[in-house]
Image 1 (cartoon, rainbow, N blue to C red):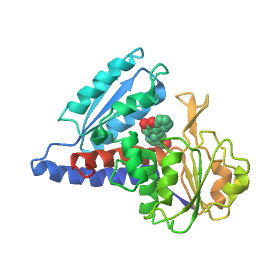
Image 2 (cartoon, rainbow, N blue to C red; image 1 turned 45 degrees about the horizontal axis):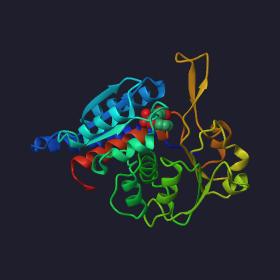
Image 3 (tube, rainbow, N blue to C red; image 1 turned 90 degrees about the horizontal axis):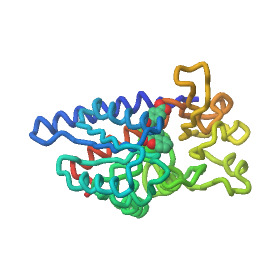
Image 4 (cartoon, rainbow, N blue to C red; image 1 turned 90 degrees about the vertical axis):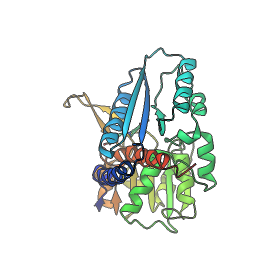
Length: 292
Ligand code: BQF
């Protein structure tokens, strides 16, 4: 079993980005600049956005964290997005999710200029990705592709089962794993809460990508010997023995699944850091006008 170290790999890639950035800056280019909009005080959102600001520092980017009150209106948020769309100093920006419940996230994402949509959540970027055109790829699926590539994991002709069908992970992941590329060229099955024979299907997988949001959902009886197991779950489970009062648990029962896997990602320090790293890759691409 090979444990995939997402934290270490992300750090390595950030250092590579930093070297490239210093060359850009030495050649008179503006330093890449990522802005992040944080609305309200959801502790998970705050933690994610803090990780992104730190990664910007490591990558040598400029970053701006723009905070808005919990009761900020949808219209106020849209005005802010329009300012960022028009700010020539900003290469890309994100609106940190989850948003407060009174704000319709889908409507907000539509207002982001696709050219600055480094999260790859705008329908134009999704559509371009689906058609294999240059696009900002959604961060989590893109981070997983990076991981497969850097660990030289063979994907051609394999059966990949994606568990979950969200717009930010499961759905785009399934498209990317099926595309004619490396990593890709998989036969892909998506399973979800309404799948009748979910266990049987997961058991047939050469590659399992678990993104269902249920702690330890994937148990060892569902995993074929030698499978590659990618755990996207970031579930906060109460734990009185920790400082924060919780710990992160994946969608995979790691302890019992790991002995059967050929490769497996841990939680934390698996897919999570690669998601943040993929955002930095997109920001650099935006600064270099590589997509649009
Ligand atoms: C780790 C995210 C669900 C909904 C919205 C490192 C992150 C998480 C975990 C992180 C995530 C998850 C992010 C670890 C960003 C990944 O060591 O395990 C980093 O910051 N993430 C987000 O911005 O929005 C989300 C998950």
